[in-house]
Length: 277
View 1: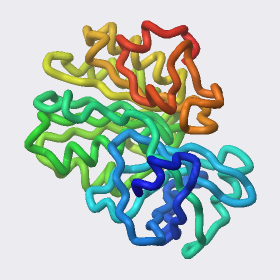
View 2: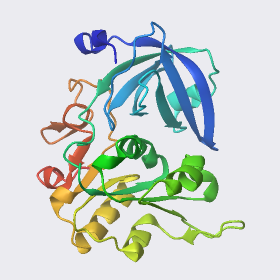
View 3: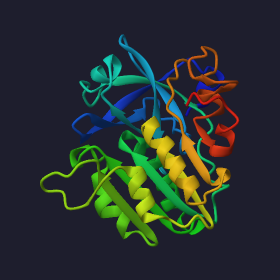
């Protein structure tokens, strides 16, 4: 984002909402553009603080865009701020400060096969890395994407899941919903159990996961059972981040702050921390 935000991390830049897309009944994607025309500069996996005066502000994953001319935030309704954000219209102004966090290790993963495992809104941060891999397709091997939600209606980014991504070379997409329903002829079951059914070979592969905390824990157990090492497993944590600069202490796990040292960690790093995540 603009250099002024790095020098003044608590000062938001003003952005204009240029598009709003209904992804699911309770998730909307907001596309925002910097009011002064300065391009954004983010890494896949980083977060930014969105301010909606006078309601408040919150930290959200921002989707990496190859153009860097706008940002996309996929935001789920979960409380006062997100409820209010879901009522805004195109043309409204918001504040954005950041980016914060370390992002995904895109360079360390080059030359590897990639396995992305997401649940619910957890696909939003992984989507940044997925889009980056597709943009730099020659740098990565086979790509597998496993995504699940409670119902078919709750699946995000359907056009990419069902139409775009499966057509890309050496890419497999697996989708599942928790319970059977009329009109759904795909897989039924929870993400961790479906992962074990697919049983992806860990050789030469990096697994990246994000979703509800309970899903992440069972996905990690499944990956360990299949032979993935701690260094082969990466997750991004969504602990509550209040200030974004490691001062308020709301997002710390032991000595680590999610907004500074995360939100991306590999399993080897997480095992050195208290089991609070």
